[in-house]
Length: 229
Image (cartoon, rainbow, N blue to C red; front, side):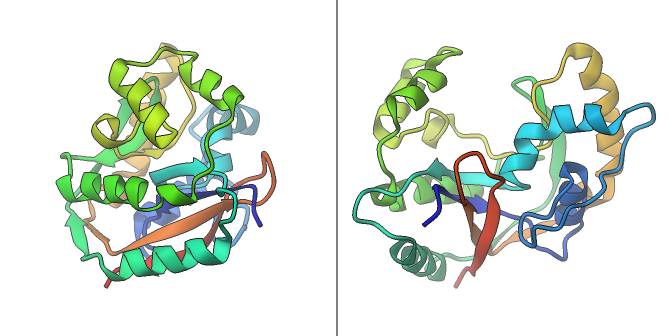
């Protein structure tokens, strides 16, 4: 059994958004293959590793249900069966365009316009699989509160184990850790150019994915994809 599980959206393997995101973060979380990342002029591999360390460990993805430890008495097999049933009942939809945007001090890929079906999918995942989630440990709760939470985020933390779900949710695929203002501008321009073709191509949302953290602190891997319908 893995240390933690997460239910994410991963772009289709054939889509440019998957290829560009995996390349930028330096690994394919589905195959485990390392990838030499493209670098802006003047950026060293050490600098790239520093600004992408956190998103690279979690793998290229958009969060639907954040990472969780399995509740006592649950198993990966039961979680797998539940995700299969959930996915079989979902209908595909399309996000016409994504965009690159700053988000709380980091850079991310987000829908160019807010997607109600995508928000609904995330909310359904949070609720549908909550019985599989063990309660967060005290240290985890303290970390979540470190930067301050709104009353709504506190309520989410108490109910769902994570602050940024339901009405507080914003779908995104993370490209960097927190950046200084001096880093943000030039890198945003370079990444926007690098991802321009991938962002302009519509994406059919017709599956979700199970990611696993095999052991504490290990890179997350895409265990399997689940097609809708």
